[in-house]
Image 1 (spheres, rainbow, N blue to C red):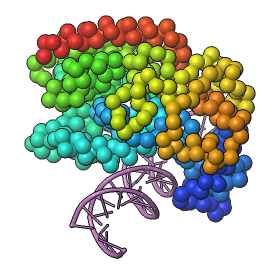
Image 2 (image 1 turned 90 degrees about the vertical axis):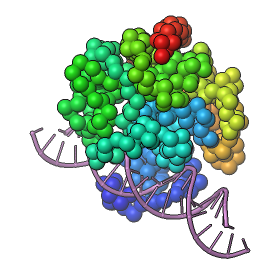
Image 3 (image 1 turned 60 degrees about the vertical axis):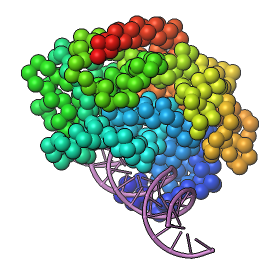
Image 4 (image 1 turned 120 degrees about the vertical axis):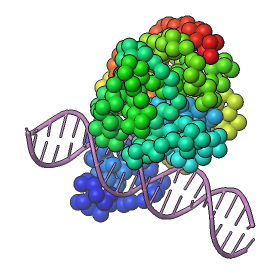
Length: 412
DNA sequence: AACCATCTCAACCGCACCGGT
DNA sequence: TACCGGTGCGGTTGAGATGGT
């Protein structure tokens, strides 16, 4: 592409990908892995730059993409994550199995923003619009960094500094640093109590830390409640009703209890997709919960997700696909009908892939799942993900946590 | 049917970070 | 330490789809 060093040397194609190009790329990656992206186009016989190939693969050709309409729960989760993470779409996408950052970003810009405004919520600040309008004009840079967590509740200094472990919310340290040094650069002086993982938007005057009292963005709590398999009406109503997010009467001890629990259990097991945890099984991606009329894959009980067990070890850089067979270390079940998944078209005629290749692709699917999670969360959490007993423990603990949270909210 | 407005989403662009040298 | 290539991320663009008149 213009501007990319890898594109200077020769005239490269731009724009939409043709089915032939897709086919070449899929075949190549399925067979060899991507390795160094810059070398992929040459090896695959494509007149594209590596960056374009990578993008095409990640956003469209990857077999583990869910595609299709977002469920209401996915949207809710995105909203809540956005309240915590801001426009860090890749981080948000990490919590939504099968969804890409690009997809989520598009959804946010095209749909969710509008919905939030209709509900009287400012999508940038997650505050009520009436509040925002009444607010003093925020600094210029806040618009770009958009989402401060508007609804805040006080938390104690010790809570904020001790219980909110940085790595829990943002396991990718480099990304954290990157965020704070570039687009999400926060006003340094405000980084007082909460770790930047939670207050990376404090440049939008969110974290009004004063003396010994910081402010905790409660949407995180609401997310955590959902995360914590709390399908109770109370929790859901709390999470969906910003008016309840910030209640000045909210007992800080309750929050302390809740947050403390979050830090030790929920957040630390963030590698496990929230609803996978809720489902109580060891699936990684089969978590999109039900009641989604627009998606046929949503039921927690259906088998459309990827059920995976793996004991394999691998390097997170390159996928050893050629060595994979379905009956080896990785077991993958692909089920569910194809929606408008282009990948399925490839696999079912439109794209001439052999049965063996399909198997390989499915293995690849599982491996990629593992790889991506591994890359994101690191070895420790990866191990957790693969260990069902750990999840059971986590679930048990989560139940206790929720009790604590519930007790706290009874005082609201 | 034609036109226009709006929406969706794949892809591009530019920037920043990282690791190697 | 500086440079460079590779990579990843978030913002933006624009073509095509869709809906309204």
